Length: 225
Image (tube, rainbow, N blue to C red):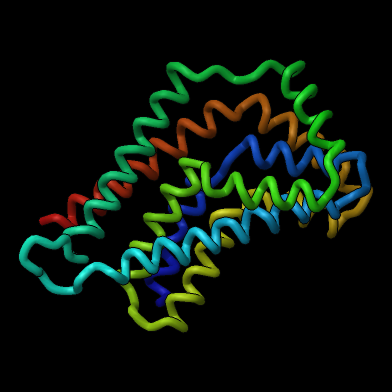
């Protein structure tokens, strides 16, 4: 189980999503209200957990041994790593070459509107958007494939899934921890973090997607050999 959890480390780094970090940070900086930021993090975590259960259920339906005319686990798991890895690398290229970063004025306008939403609405919205985030779902699928490789026992799989989902949302937890741990003293740090992430978000996205997409491709190719 420990070896499987260690394999979550690359996925957790690939899960760094500047947009969500900026959102959580903006909710708390000079606001003093961590309740809405907590609702955002909790909603995304619960959405990932539900999606992870669904993915594991599907993977458990695959036969363990080769079966005539059926896809088995030894064929499916490396293919998942390969497909997700290629997808992340393509997303990196798209993000770097095609996608443009919203202007500071647009970001400020969007964040201003989002700040007006209350905690229950933010919780439901972030729970729902967890299922349509291509990057998060891709990484979650790769993570559940790692879990399926490591264990078929329910208790171990649940513990690993819980850790995996935490690994998927840790970038959002960091600013929340700063606010809770430092209080108003952390406001300036949160604002600097928000600005820095906003300036460098395209480079961050492209770098982590390309690097860890390559890791998954290598893992998939190794499993197919």
